[in-house]
Length: 107
Image (cartoon, rainbow, N blue to C red):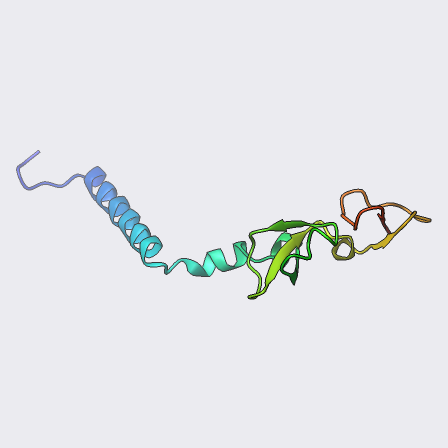
């Protein structure tokens, strides 16, 4: 190999390093926010935006996914799973959805 020769391996490594640097710059400057807005959205996580402080009373679990100001993302709500909260289910019970205390989530 002569003093000025560049191998294919060095060209590939330089290209990979350049791609890595471009990705780092996009992440640091916030240009990749397009992807994170849908990942952090409450409705994409099968949640429902409710007034702040009401999630526990409705039987759900408050989370930090994004909602409009004055609201919080509430997961596992019965009405968001297509059910209704009743004292005793006359139809099939939905076990993975929450209701206020003393009630069950029914189909």
